[in-house]
Length: 471
Image (cartoon, rainbow, N blue to C red; front, top):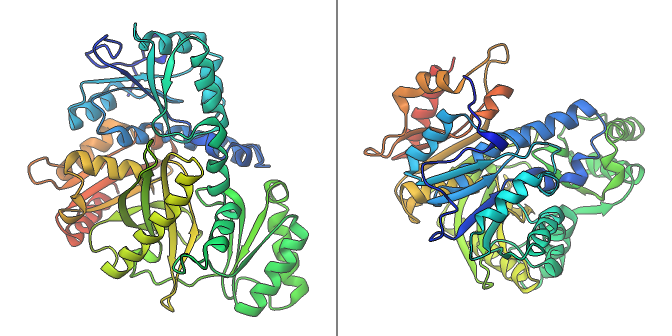
């Protein structure tokens, strides 16, 4: 299907978002900036380009994190077709959705905006005569703060309700890194005993990391190595029982071989943790809780869920419902989440964050990391709130997938996918069905979707129907 683009890569709805009686809201999808030092350290140029491309393709998916916005301008790396634009605005009755696409796509979109005079002028125009913009983003990156600074230098008052101030922006990278979060957990053990992590070490250098991991593997039967801030499974090595030789020298050489493949292992701190054999019947083995720190500093609970994680540690999506975990576990996760959020807020952080957990087969629950930004479940939550209400967890079961694999030998268009899935489309009357949440990911032979069912069994039935229809 041909994509219809207006000049400057601009696509807009029927209303002018710059109308004087509306305060302009701008959202920047800058996912790659959250882990740009990591991405730029991927040794294989093909793999690095793939990572940038996949992140860019998630831009239309992130439109769904804005489901509650009636009038919004979003700046993202790629345009969407007029059909996808109509599909989205019809679903949410959005009055005005404007999409701006910088002429250059480097992966660092805020830099691309700063060096695109037409996009910058458009943002200034959107501030209207009141000279005020509300600016939001996927993550508060250094590049985002530079863009805020540049707009303020143009005489515009920029309000950032989901971002810390510049002097507190260190909280994003510190607490959002695995080493920084581990430090917080270690400092908090006496105050919040439920906030605990599996035994582990933080070190620098692949030689020492390989030695520590080898000893841990031979002693416990497993080991996990993580770079301090990876992305979607990249920067994680999981060694399960039987994966490595039982001879120390051979096992160490095997781990070193893996670590030498990418320079980021030598560039960032390396975390070595005990392997946790999870119980998949409890939140998929990886329960999660998400919050938001308001601009006032108030910590707001959003939802808890089970994460859908592959064997290799790649995040696929979420399952959200009231009974995805027990009441006892939900209470514990929420208590930990509030505790963490209060520490973040005290240090100046503002915006979304979550806490990931692993539920061991021995019944022990360990925190694994915290994403200090919007997450892979934020768009699911915002969509559910818009279609139901904030208590949606008691009314529906939600399943999402960000990268369901399609036939790699076939090219799919958005029109074809909609035609195939029409029998199970989300129905506003029954409040059940599937919503396709990305057109761009189809080019990488992946389907992203959200499914709503009145029960978990019903949601799983719809997902099974989807799999049949896409064969």
